[in-house]
Image (cartoon, rainbow, N blue to C red):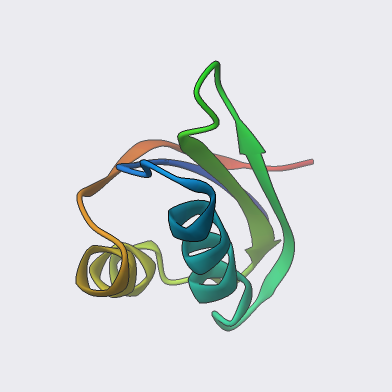
Length: 75
């Protein structure tokens, strides 16, 4: 089952965005990573069998404040 997770991350500069994308891309089961939103502060993660809680904790530790906005099944 593929899932799509949208996470709002506190990113203030390009370096923060790069770090956030690297953290997410290294997670197990991730097949797609992208940025969206007016300030490019939302990370979109698509993959199979992703542990959202582990991902959020890792982002909070390495980048900063992170919150799950949506977690849906992707078709």
